[in-house]
Length: 355
Image (cartoon, rainbow, N blue to C red; front, side, top):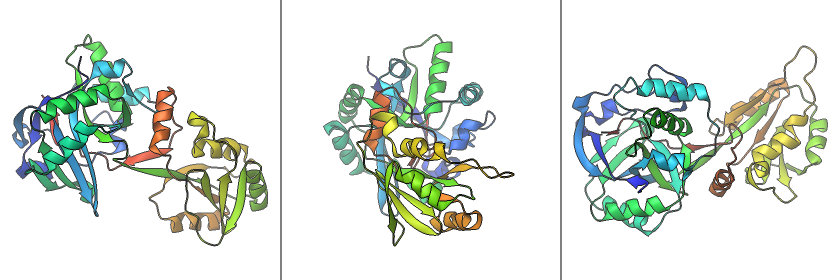
């Protein structure tokens, strides 16, 4: 059975796109009332025959381009689509509840794969033609959509069906699709709308760790030095895989890994930092609570170091893990620790509806 398929869709009309399409955020998974913030107005969509679509998001000179397709839920159940994050059942239940009461989820799950020749050729050919949609969308991203012609669409579907696919974003939507499929008696035509990108087709971002104070900087540096090579830096160190930045006592340091990296989850920088340092921190002084916050790397460092200067806490800056770490974890059947990385940009919600 083909895992990746052309799908008959309702595609938002050009003249309604800016009013209908919205940003897709993590908060969608937390609500059972209006998870997507999109009111599906049938008048905003045109019917389209079964097809595949090239979808590009561009901003500030960078473009992120993939293929929108239908992925058989059976393939997800069989483990041919692998994830790297744990899911929370309450979120899954909220999505199932919501989908049962709406005209269909307008958000796309995001998958990664190692691109092949049909994928490269289809993207190039589609983008050389006039787009089906082209509009300024959420987050300042220009949203552009092309329909993939024949026979390129069939060749692309076959190539993607033979590839191993990895969930980048949408673990809860994928789990909800599985639950809905089981309740419905496992229909063979059940599918999940997905955006499939090349392994390097997204930008990975990291989460830093901010530890509330007060902390004894000398004791912390001694603790970190038991597992890392610690060096003081004249400027803010650039986090890299195997090198973690540390702001403590109004100074910057780099913690460099000096031993062979363990495989899988245990070898991630976030895991090593947690195991070797954060889990071994002394308790907070009487009357204080020690907190470790995971903070998106996009937040300005100046704000974070100012917090440390105020309460004598510390900041650890991390680089995102490389894409091969994601696939290694997924292939091993492991899950990444919470707040290890996130992908951007996320596909906008409401461009496509599966008929």
